[in-house]
Length: 342
Image (tube, rainbow, N blue to C red; front, top):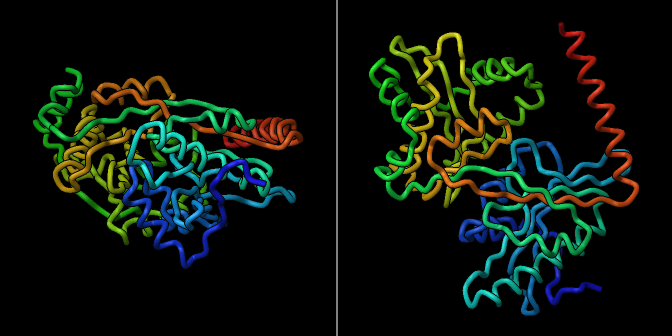
């Protein structure tokens, strides 16, 4: 029996439009919670809706999963920074909203821990209550992102550190410019060039996934490639932005360092923020975080607020030693591949 007064069930495809509309109106919902994002990946997913006694949909959570060795493994698809519960009723006294949130979370936890063997969920940027998860055996991890408020671009400019403003000015002086594009064939070499600089590669399966979600979001006018070009018209860098009703996400970027100016990335990010403010009317710009010190330092210079983002993880008792062994095998295999590549 559920420990919550709410009850949860998997939504049918007939309910997807209601779900997506409800996510659009919510403060915690993101584009990554919507079904067109989840459908773009070649893996099954379910949207678990949470209902009150009157049968009204008060919240829910999408779950992307895979079947591996007879186990049901739920984890976010590639480049999905946020999932987790979404609450649709957020008006009223704080304690009542919090009680609703905890009740919905508890109902969802009861549901997913029955049908999954392992779960990892990155919570929405405004979801800070991890208590229901901790109290039910989930491990809680925290990372950070930088979020820039876009309500006043004059203020945003002043909040940039001196080095960023200098690089942007120099970039304009040397003829750098940015433009919108949908040509992913121009973008992938930039991305692969950047990954190669860190001894990383982009698998063909990942290329297909990026093309899939970019097409799905472009059809909804929710994604765009922003390119930076030098004075000779050569594309030297690019960023894929995706967005929803509230914020834009700096999801993926690449730079061809052999032709790019040292000012290219600064001007690219600045033009991305301007586009999100002036053309899209968005309130926030989310850098999608990084724990890599050099990347974190670069993001920090754009004046955003340091924002924690939580993820929760749960597994049956036998999962943890299996997971450690699997990670060790994957690490050894990766090292062997890199040795052979040399």
